[in-house]
Length: 196
Image (tube, rainbow, N blue to C red; front, side, top):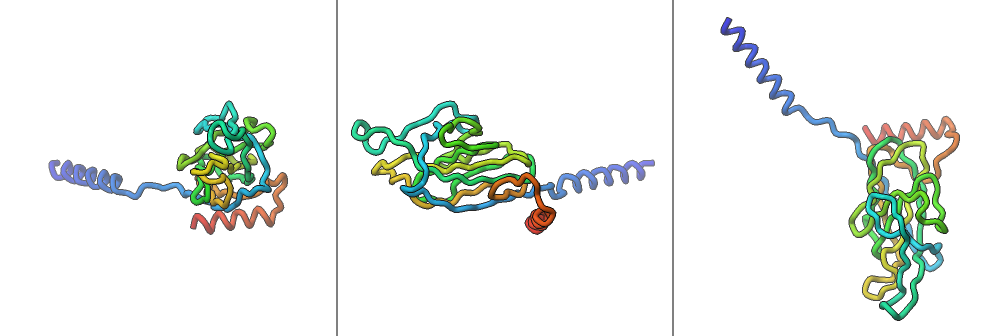
């Protein structure tokens, strides 16, 4: 009887140890990088104020120079449409730029003349825009400058590289209304190749 209890105790400790040291399931993380540029020919807008991960409720005009010398002016912008393949938390961040970037993700539509409509949040200076995104939704990531033409902070123009990371495949471009079978197969093959 004692031997049976000892065997069960050893078996229990073995199972507990095996469970404790079993590899943890790690969810696949996808990252998509893209590059762009803000130039003097880029569209203008009055960007939202910093709001973190909550929708912004006000806009901000930027000065062209030292306080009191030059009037407020709008910023330049670049828009990247994208959609995701799975529900979850996605981070949008600038990984390299020639100026201080300011990011604003939008859901469903983007209109520069109405910058608060459909804005999900903001990100800047190493603080990513982190949002819960879902499939079958068109998103837009707007890149603009945090500062505009302030001498010691640069011109607010130049090239940048952004990343979008999250639990699902991230596809740059417009969300298709009707996906052709060939395109769906290509997306699935890319997903399988990326997840292994």
